[in-house]
Amino acid sequence: MWAKTITGNFASVIHGLNANHLTDQVIQRSKRMILDTLGVGLLGTSTEICHKVIQYSKIYSSDISSTIWGHLDFRLPPLYAAFVNGVAVHSMDFDDTWHPATHPSGAVLPAVIALSEAFPQKKKISGLDLLLAFNVGIEVQGRLLRFSSEARNIPKRFHPPTVVGTMGSAAACAKLLALDQLKCKNTLAIAASYAGAPLANAATQTKPLHVGNAAKHGLEAACLASLGVQGNGQILDMESGMGAFYTDYNPQILPTLQSYPWLLDQQDVAIKRFPAHLGTHWVADAASSVRRKLVEHNNNLLPLDKIEKVIVKVPEVRYVNRPTPNSEHEARHSFQFVACSALLDGSMSVQSFASENIHRAALQELLCKTHLEHPSDNRPSFENLYCEVSVTLQDGYTFSDRCDTFYGHWRKPLRKKDLEKKFQSNASRVLSAEATEGIIETVYNLEKVEDSSVLSSFLSRQSARALSEKLHLF
Image (cartoon, rainbow, N blue to C red):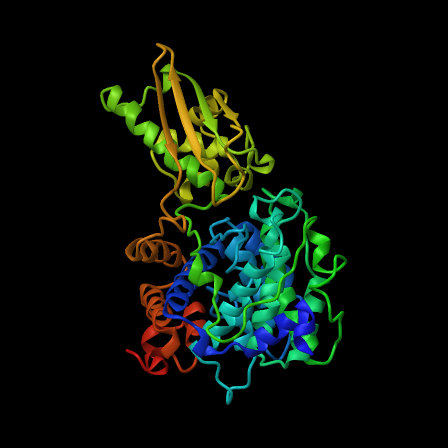
């Protein structure tokens, strides 16, 4: 009965996957994703858009509440906690990226953490429960993305987390709620009616809402399905269902549960070193290399006044082609800005997108000399694209370098020490050193943690020492 449709097959797999299916590599990779997502989410709580959605969400109240990351005395109903924390994760475009293109973790982790806090105290959600639900949500996204060759390129029409992220959040929450197969089908059907947002809102404060809504709507879909709300049982099979988002939609059944092959086992995610669109990370590495050559040629000084032109060869991605960005959100989506910033400073960081750096005279002068080119062999795919940066001086000398794989890409993943350094740098702006180290310890041992609420306690700034007994690890 269940294998007759794609939707039924997905429901069967979501329902049937258990902790024994998780492989060591999937567990380790997903822990890295969780740690990174918590760090960028904590950092994102300081952003203007996060403050605005917190103010908006205060109009809601409930007897059941979940943690708002980084806030000790403020909680929200699970749906709005998932929303706010999801917005925080994507507020600086600092969260992980997968291929085919999407931000997989930000739509799922805030939802399952918020939902785990909504369970009665007598029914503890273990760290292993959380890991399994998280990975089910990641897996569903990856499988849906592979139903379209169009999805393998950087998107042009809609922001992928609003589609597959919503479905992944729904699947993860359905798993955490232990819904039966029929309710898993209805969860997917309901979630599909929440899915989709146009890419035109990229580089604005609205884009982070996409991930927040994906987390919230997936959780809401699972809750509605748990109450018996019904939807189309063939939502993944139909052109008027999930097929509405892709011109070449070709759904396939999932592998059998016997030795299930997780996509995360086959391909890692990219974890960013600075908060901007993933395509700009190739630009930053190429431009930083060119800067080193320029400085070596000019007695350890950057010959800024001698630069005649800067050529940046990248794929044609219109929403990241921004010659004159005026805000931090536009700068995060500008090949030109990142090229010029890396040439000036030698590297990129959170501070690169501060207003004083965006509007400094030297950068504005360099932007006027910068031009994009789009070679025909440079495909708009996070798997295949490259960046070449060339700087020509007034005396005719040209300095060039090319990046095919930046550090942090799944082909060149961050070392453990650099992942931890990023997390500590992000989290320490909000949490104490004690709580920051408590999160690292908890995430690294998540499959052994009996009560995952310890993670929420750390995220809400509670003392690590006071919580150490709950971990059964320290």
